[in-house]
Amino acid sequence: EPEVTQTPSHQVTQMGQEVILRCVPISNHLYFYWYRQILGQKVEFLVSFYNNEISEKSEIFDDQFSVERPDGSNFTLKIRSTKLEDSAMYFCASGMWNTEAFFGQGTRLTVV
Amino acid sequence: DQQVKQNSPSLSVQEGRISILNCDYTNSMFDYFLWYKKYPAEGPTFLISISSIKDKNEDGRFTVFLNKSAKHLSLHIVPSQPGDSAVYFCAASGETSYDKVIFGPGTSLSVIP
Image 1 (cartoon, chains in turn brown, red):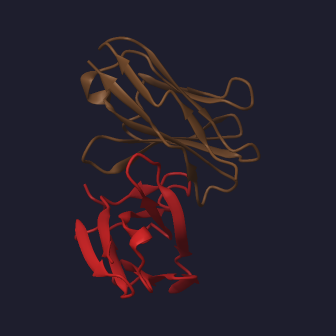
Image 2 (image 1 turned 120 degrees about the vertical axis):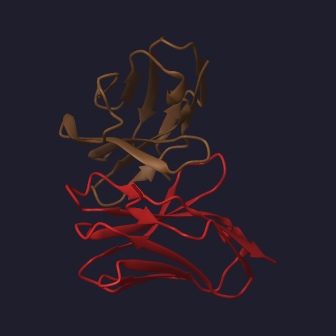
């Protein structure tokens, strides 16, 4: 069964460093998303991506964040200068339609 | 600002009985609702959805009911099985687009054998 895969499973980074979280969505999907879940809190929408551009983003997705689909298969989330409060589980998701999404296993980002 | 609320953080049900998970929303612009299930150390898994033009959607053991006037939806699981033990998230979209999905805080369901 096709699945969304995320790498790495756990990333530890120093505050102020740049991180790139990688995702391989399901191959025939057209909509791509990043969500995050801070420990003990709810899953929060970050950004959606369709037709090679951002279609929607939340207030969390500020100038420190960017997304790219560089080669038609990978979908990346970059955080330019990480802060302690960026520590969270980051989930990539994809969907054929924008009405339901299939999530990856997540990348746990720890900023120290 | 909790636009999607799940007021029960946890629920315990005996195997074979019905599990009812509740969800309330505040934004009347939402018109598409979803339920996701999440096991520890995994991403959320889509379970079932409902559009605001319907009041019920059924898929096997899972049924979602929507009461638009009350801004309330519920997920019924019948019969409950131990493998259903997980965190269940209610989610809503349609305010600005269907791309942006707002999740509730989740309800942890334990099905006791």
